[in-house]
Image 1 (tube, rainbow, N blue to C red):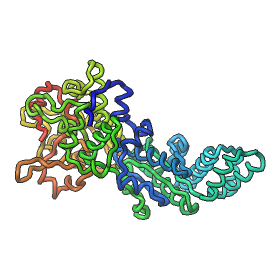
Image 2 (cartoon, rainbow, N blue to C red; image 1 turned 45 degrees about the vertical axis):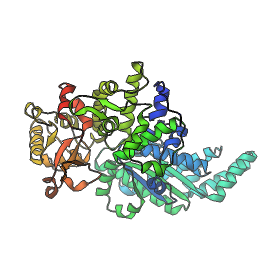
Image 3 (cartoon, rainbow, N blue to C red; image 1 turned 180 degrees about the vertical axis):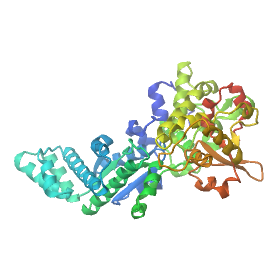
Image 4 (cartoon, rainbow, N blue to C red; image 1 turned 180 degrees about the horizontal axis):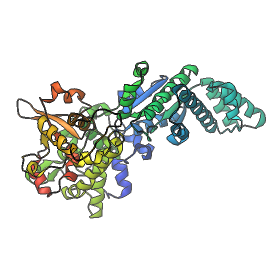
Length: 487
């Protein structure tokens, strides 16, 4: 096979190689080239009345929705994509009782779905709102009556007539709702909005056979809703959890590179390929080894890339895209060590900013907690300034609490242990433990939620994830190389 040649790392090629930070901005044709259709994807697109995709911010929910929506359209399904602006008025009044909020959700969804279906059929009915009022939430009955009225008053093309007949014969509508928790705050009012939305979707789907909903929710939003909704057990079978291991994310990067160069990929085969074998495909884009210092000297590039990211594909997109941008700025066509080093503080700061934005509604002054984890003078002299025993971590958090009045939006009691659990939940810290061979095994919250419990935590140490450390380390990068191991 002909050797792959380095390319010009301009903005266009960077996006084709690594993608965009948000799935909804991704070019759909390129996205489908490198997208993995896992069992999670198959579960999402199944013909069930309701599917709720759960995952952390940046894990790829929007990308999965975009692929699923596009493929539904290609197969001829009536697929509708609703965005927060379509139902913005529902968020404005947050003091209504549940039954009224459910009713408003049902009306808003019915009206938006009906109007969107007519738009897809190139039809317009100025009386659609009145039809909804008179017929309630029987969506297919509303559309049938509206279409019949339009047929009597307008001349339709043969193409329109065929599309209308196909739709009326199939009586299937798939509705996608992504980013609906954009205005989320972890308060009872916001919880009520989501719980009543789910209740409204379930009711509409039951009343309209052939109507189905796909809803995407952040993991933290789902947890708050699940804890507050007594009827949540009734829709647990609708849940689809989206999460990835770091190895999976590295495979995604390799597939992006290979498909960029025009190769056809067998997904099942590439997922079973070892990282060492996969890493050979980094060569046209990255130099093979990281030319760092200390514990980072001559480390394989794949190890550096996978160590600097959380279990979120967006982290690797950011790291690669920003490094490629730095390489392009310096006239290089291969991403080298100096390009990655140049962007690490900015990258680390963006990860902290993302975390503050994602979880700031749950904890007041979250920025002071995260930046408060900066090593003290005493900690800087340790072998690893970001590694703690459970007692050391509790003590550090207790000291941070003395200067800031933290409050959980949920009203939960504020203790140093509660803050430690929070840091673990948001993936700011990971649990670590050495095995019998001295190898360090790490766990994040998604992999094991129980490690922060009192009867488990004493068996583990804790460390700040490497992605955050660069912005928390005011000293030279040389100190980072010297003290932080990539083991």
